[in-house]
Amino acid sequence: MAQFRGTVQGGRGEAARLGHKSTGLSTTCRGWSIGVDAYASTTDDIDCIAVVLNEGNGYNAGRSMTLGYALETPAGPVFQPSTALVEQILRAHGVEPLTPATVQVAA
Image (cartoon, rainbow, N blue to C red; front, side):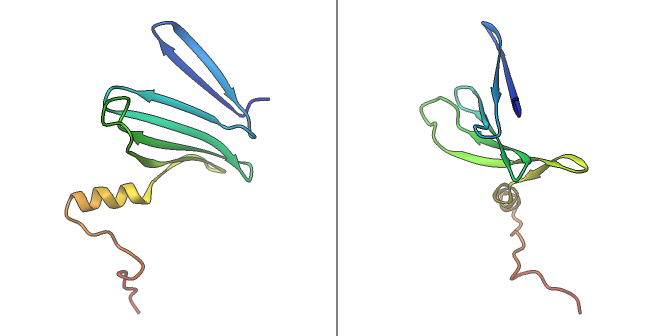
């Protein structure tokens, strides 16, 4: 039985593909200068889908950044943003991210 199911709708209709615990499932949606990839996998019986932003199919394609992870939890699905993404957003707004060395605990 399949663990994952992916669908796509385009100019030639709809298509679906299945992924199993042993194979996972990779999906891609790309434009000329932007795209998103999703990689579904199972580790220790927990489903996880990594969401990755990329530069699409254009001449400058190649760079990518993990946006975060959709995880299966007992309370339901959650999205955990990538730490690197959060740090980049903070720095873009002039805020230096906290690190364990910079966090001061009140006594």
